[in-house]
Length: 311
Image 1 (cartoon, rainbow, N blue to C red):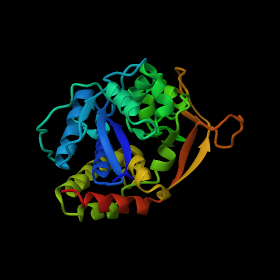
Image 2 (spheres, helix red, strand yellow):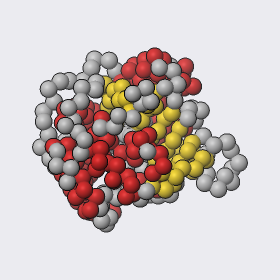
Image 3 (cartoon, rainbow, N blue to C red):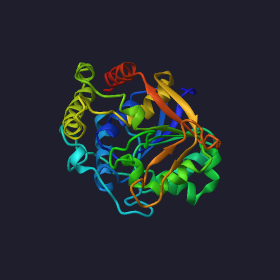
Image 4 (tube, helix red, strand yellow):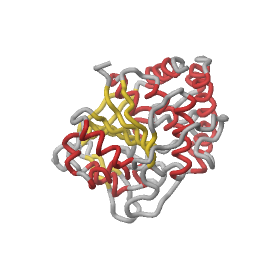
């Protein structure tokens, strides 16, 4: 429909990334121009294969573009012990019948924004390297991006170090480029996504969709749940990445506040921290809208309903 928002989903699947892809494909409000992949939870070859597998599962022909395999400056980190060796351990997935495109992710991002000025929303839900690199390679795109809606950081604690959240820590310098770019940035950090825990009743509601995609999503969440319980003692896994997609479909599920956010790019205990000036003590201009509250039941209701609509 002409009302649909054009988006590029930049991801590193990953269990919660997989659900973000499924939600985007299932939602007519969004026109998924392409999926770009990055290293992150696992390496680039694995995340790219995983993206192709999830699109295959959903019956989607959206193109996949390979992106960065390494951060801009730091050494690569990864999260195999949360997502398993393949990055999508749990359910059996179909082998992809197609490969990624030959165009690089950064080129695809740049060209899409230039072709559709002020219409493309970039959704980085993994390492931020691809979007930052696009901004550096072609600075003309920055004022032409409709919005950058990202999953990363947080107003409080980290999850990979005491100070830093994983996606930002993967490439703090890339995140710094995005937050200091003057683009229209919306941030879904841990303070919000940890309000979106997939409890057993939520997983059951997804499973009740009964179609293949819903069953796979439920199995992914069951695997993810164990890793979360072991690491944080949470009763359910935090479904971080699909918050970005849910916000684009149904923004009233979330409460956001404008504030100034900087990324700590100094090596040390706070490397990769998103420093959020909640009380505006620095009196700097707002450069981001930060998610503060999540209607978890409404969020999981949306996910269950949409996944049930997939083939």
